[in-house]
Amino acid sequence: SQQGEEDPQALSIQEGENATMNCSYKTSINNLQWYRQNSGRGLVHLILIRSNEREKHSGRLRVTLDTSKKSSSLLITASRAADTASYFCATYPSKGGKLIFGQGTELSVKP
Amino acid sequence: DGGITQSPKYLFRKEGQNVTLSCEQNLNHDAMYWYRQDPGQGLRLIYYSQIVNDFQKGDIAEGYSVSREKKESFPLTVTSAQKNPTAFYLCASSMGQANGYTFGSGTRLTVV
Image (cartoon, rainbow over all chains, first blue to last red):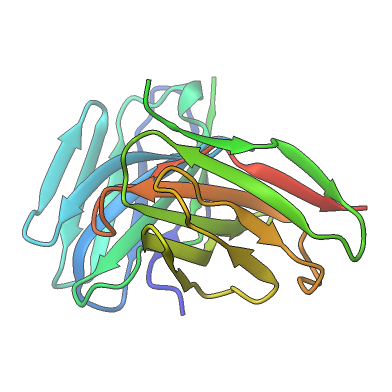
């Protein structure tokens, strides 16, 4: 069963706007990670947030984690056409095991 | 520069043929993984290895085999038993399972 589910499945915005993607999960986690995938390429690790952290920043990226709601959000501020990609959340369970990826959000940023 | 290299980028397989996908990393990572990605889908884990000479089945291991004879290398063989092998295959590595993964650029396998 899928641990992480992203919402929305697809998002289309204009350059300069902010993009927000959400991820929900079911079981308790050690950490949650966000990845970007450009079309036909491998995934690139963006940010890792641990279960005892609530917010993390990296450049134009802001990730929040609400363990009580079992959800996370990824905010990309002042989006650019180069941000067009699929974004995946992945959760690492508290009990260990393996990283579980969601289905992804396809972001399109129009110039 | 450290990284993870997958080859070939494109691979064509005839019916009943076994093919091997290469994955090499020079990051000194202990753990390595193989994922399958179908169009518009997320990643599904095929096999993973946490240490040399040891590997575990993932969620969709049937029809695939792996080896981990060296820390740097984790080749994946798609056997003739895999009935629907056409997909994008991604290899990844990490220092440990709870850390961020580094991915290769993928191999696109097509059955002809």
